[in-house]
Image (cartoon, rainbow, N blue to C red; front, side):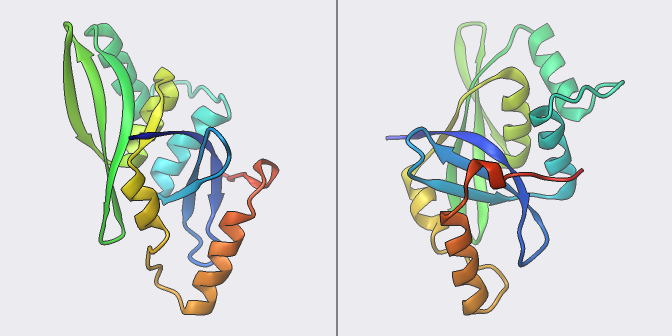
Length: 160
């Protein structure tokens, strides 16, 4: 059974200095950190902060194309974690049919924010995320894990 999660914010990994999207389940029991690139983090941050650029960014263009073509984004599903890489798809409704489109989670999340679509995660992803190897020594991995588990919504923030 898929687990519904929401984007709770963006922050910077204190070990690698890379942006992280923080997903939390509806009961605030599970946290899923997804490391993303700075460009994708910026696209997510713009939407989280309700900043409207003067011209459409790539994810705004995607949203506009889908809307104009009568396509509805039903949900984003993060399906797998292999070799420290997350996999996802967009579930679209097109003319009464369901279409699944392979997508990078970072792009799917940036789009789902714009169209207000829900995010779901397969339980195996949450289980696998506990064992992500992060090019750091064991002490740093343990420190990061404790830090992620202790996150408070007020701690979340990302500087563009």
